[in-house]
Image 1 (cartoon, helix red, strand yellow):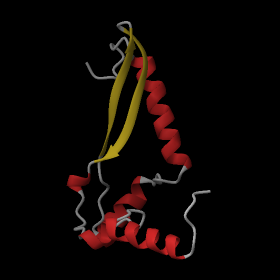
Image 2: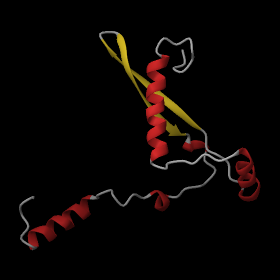
Image 3: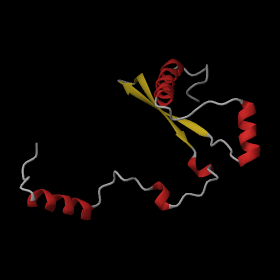
Image 4: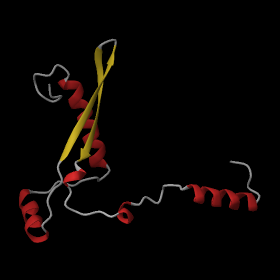
Length: 116
């Protein structure tokens, strides 16, 4: 049974978790809501289409009783029309082993052998 259907006995728990996830994404400016007219204009001028999303629910049970649900709203990236190359997706926060070795050697050279 689908989590947000009225017939689902866990609907309230699921809806609360969905609201928290949606609120968190909207507060962080992850997306913006536009009117149908603006969407049609963007689609006609730039051939931009919205990427569909879905919400994934996991219901947590305690002694067989549903106590809370976790939800995560994810974009279906496999339907994105933009072609991405690896350099576009590179995250500068990823630490590679050679970089860790380099930073460690710099710290030792400068006499910083203790963590603070």
